[in-house]
Image (cartoon, rainbow, N blue to C red; front, side, top):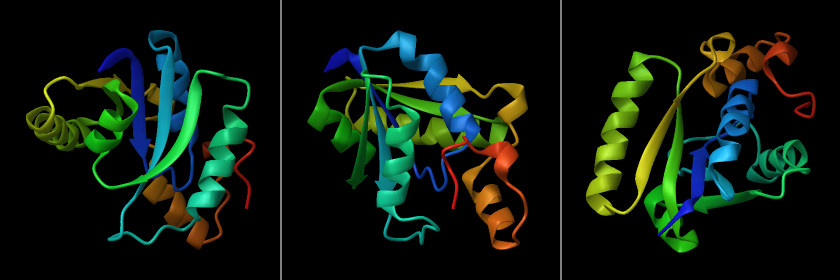
Length: 153
């Protein structure tokens, strides 16, 4: 595993300012970061994988250390495929921490060479979640304060 490569997985449905904030804060730690859209057959996304990839590519177009990908399956398998040494996860609250800690422990059981790095949300973004944004979109609320300028629909 390469400890200069990280994977930042998520649904990014849609990409929020919270996601972008986490990425900007960890960029200096790694030579390469894969932002990976997880494809989960049990969830019905609001936006297509292609749309989410377009947004992420546009947001990070000037950052050569960021690669955008989509993956169906376990995140740990993607990490092994790209020889990543870290998984980056954002934490908004204690509920996130409990869930993410369990995932990190299972991932460590599956591959002890890959560490999970938890980054706490900046307070101004701690209340943002893609699921909350999707619900607001369904009721036609103005979600522009929560999204990067490039994320328009």
